[in-house]
Amino acid sequence: MTISELKRTMDFVKKCIMDAGALGRFNDLISILEQNSRVQPHTGQQQQPITTQKAALISVIRAINIQELTLNERQLLKTFIDPNLMGEKGAAKINQIFADHNLDPMGAVNAFKEV
Image (cartoon, rainbow, N blue to C red; front, top):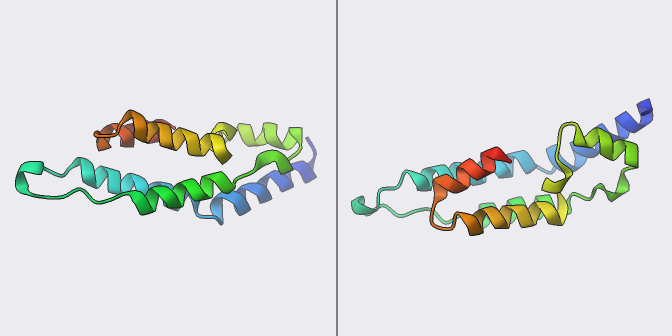
């Protein structure tokens, strides 16, 4: 690993994850899921739709393409971010969590927090 590879990897994380707002979009989605898990149906409360937050998160995740990184840079990236949670694989993981916990917002929250 060279200093330039380290710098490129950090630049990649800044541009594709931090500046793109992936963490904020992820937190927005979890926040609404948590709110929905507290809704009591017998009180007449309605769950909030998550369509916008889900679409925004998937859009950011799909845009992350680690193919531009060298093998060494990808190895470095793996030390703090799972590449399987980025790109199409990451979008598929998000959709799978929703499929697995379709009627259980708290289950989805817990699954996201495990990721």
